[in-house]
Length: 315
Length: 274
View (cartoon, rainbow over the protein chains, first blue to last red):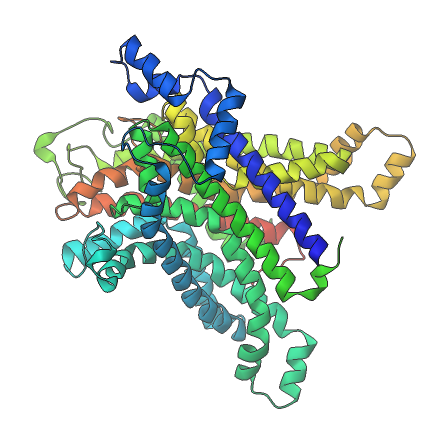
């Protein structure tokens, strides 16, 4: 067990290092001088040279990469060129929007998908199964940002029940903050719910054919109790896996949804950094998102080891 | 093929996809009016009125024409991206299946790494240097597709390599490259085709997202994503501008996903159609 854990951990660290190298290479080796890109066409040679020195662009690539990496490891992500503040602080500030948004979306999608998937599996090939199937087809096909637009049209423009966007900040109160994230979270949750419904349905179907569920039924447990007590807990493993695998898409969706609802989250930060040519911020945000995906997949792997003892045997 | 009418998912998917391709191709020769033609007098006219079948936008441009050309722009961008991703990824997959060993380990890790960067972010990174546009969008989506196809073909090819007839081919001295061409690729081509169909749906969603953020084809070329972005200013006056392009995206993705699922069920008797 310990040796597997160590091996996974080493592999995680190597992966993270390679990702950081990859992002650094893309951002620094592509044609174009970062300093010139940041300053635009009106820059004088003097300011350009000054910025190049400030950004350390005169140093060799290897030195710059190591300096960036060591900084990142110490929690120093560099200075934002446009905001004039440390990037680490910016990311933490924006994370206070993106993280609750993503969590709300995951909770909502599970809350929709698991009951729907279980119900569909219990009435296999019945009317409800078809309804659940149609729901997942449609919700996977609709873009999350379009759902966001429709929600705004319906509940903000027409009915005037909800704010059309923006974020008042957590200082305005927990409920005010959560209310501002409600529609974005629904938009983000819907496509996820479609994927998870499918996974939950087929997982419950698989488990229901297993001996231990039959034994539970034979012992006199009701069909419903057998599903909820025995089939569902086992079926949750693939659901959790899928949440991990879908994490990339959740982040991509969050970038879009944040822009629809004008939420000051990480995705919006990345897009603003792009339009302002703030290379350092972009580099750090992309690294942060990628590291998040990788660590998430690592945690899913670990969760397996906890849930399923058979996987603890070294291969 | 006679059984297609007993497969509603496949049938619907095929009809929707063919209709979409037809509209996209048709837009190259005819649209109700020029999609870029402005007519300020007729601006923001609702569908089924004097503004034409699907109404007009804030510049009085014909929405139906824009959607048609948008279909071509979206489909062609997505198709190119998936084609590049599928070719590179599949080539990587079969080559790795031939060699195995440390190469497999490195490539699989590499796939994990590429998969960790969402195409929207790589499009932003590339966009900062190459400028945003169709080329950047295609590359960003294609890069994300490579690991999908590499994993799929590697897993499929490994199974075929374990078959007896492949062992026999190795035994009579056929080269690995020849075996890959003659035995491996034909046997996994079905899986690749199914995956191409499903990834096309994902590519259309991604392309729409990139266009929505202004990272896709530049104006005046109409794209579904940018039509949605532009609609945001006119929610109260012209909700159809926000509804119609989104429906186009959803129908296109739905059709491709159903076609992919239908094809998989038809080509692989082991999977359950229900």
